[in-house]
Amino acid sequence: MKPLSRTVPPSLTMELDRQARALLAAGRDVINLTAGQVDLPMPPAGKAAVRAALERDKTGYVPATGSPEVKAAVREKMGWQAGEILIGAGAKPLLHAALMCLLGPGEEALLPVPCYTSYPEMIRLTGAEAILVATGREIGWKLTRAALEAHVTDRTKVLLLNHPVNPTGAAYDRDTLREIVDFCLARDLYLVADEVYANFVYDGPFMSLYAFAEVRDRLILVNSASKTYAMAGLRLGYAVAPAPVAKAMGGYLSQAVGCPCSLSEQAAVAALRMDSAYEQDLRAAFKARRDLLRGLLKDLPGLDAGPGEGAFYLWLCVFGYEDDLSFCRKLLEQEGVALTPGSAFACPGYARLAYTKKEPQLREAAARLMRFIQKNYSSSSAVSS
Ligand code: PLP
Image (cartoon, rainbow, N blue to C red; front, side):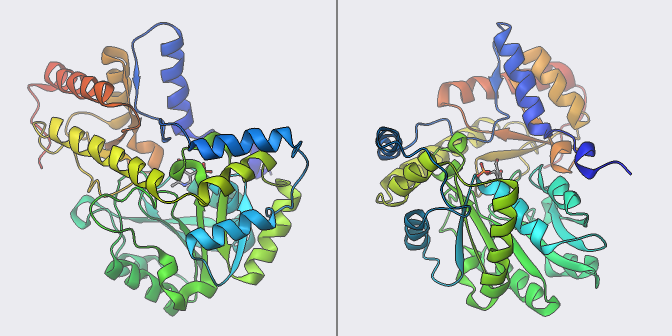
């Protein structure tokens, strides 16, 4: 049998980003709206901390699950009182570590779709099976207890939930989270939660799963500095987990990853200890972009299909025009606008627009998108809203 790792395809989102970058490098005028990363600078305090750490030669290994001062800064900032804190090289290895420790061959994990492109492969690499639970436009792209009940079996061990959701921009409210928590407790499941977009909720306060104290001994909650502090390339994530799970994750991380980056740890400490002005400004900037784009796209009825409550994505409905892969390919070729097809998120028929560019480029991208649709599909009926 082939080793599982040899059958892992590269992340489709990174592949499309690569294609757009290649066109840019060849001199084409491309607006790349595929990359899910903040385009604004990281906090100056974080930059200064990296420089200072370098000057002090802080370039050695740090403990496998992070240095005590970083854990303390995370605990204080996040208000994670109960449970063990783990620091990792981004949210991704922490999520993978949690899944590796909680799942094995013959077991199942419930996975709401559309979902972050890496989740199905992360689950498959544990030897377990990802059971896809469809969310949909008519239910605001959110899980319901009924949908979960319809898919749970006695092999189910984990529910993997991302909130706010990449790619749809859905953000869960307290009542729906309550139902999900009750379901996990009733079925004795671990809840692996990815809240990397916690800072990007626009129409009300963010509701963390950590608020439900009764689930904390079954909750592995992951967040990171990548989006909150625009530090994606520095690779610094943090998680809280019940002690036995944290111990297992620590063993896995020490063998498979080593430790987080010593310089990035210092950047994170500085960022976590700031007041919240930077986070608020970032959120305000992205809210303004979301509002701008939704206004610009409103004349294409039905195109904007997501709730747009959080993260920094618009979820566009393209199946009324064409299949998502052809739509995105043609749009890139004809108009130089790069979107990510919904197929990358296990949801064909849609496309994800990352509003991770400044206002003039977003205006230009919206104009090109309208022109593209008028030129190619003016005779086809518009997508129903
Ligand atoms: N989780 C989700 C839902 C994401 O969208 C991303 C990146 O786009 C990640 C995790 C990766 O986060 P990190 O850079 O902290 O590994």
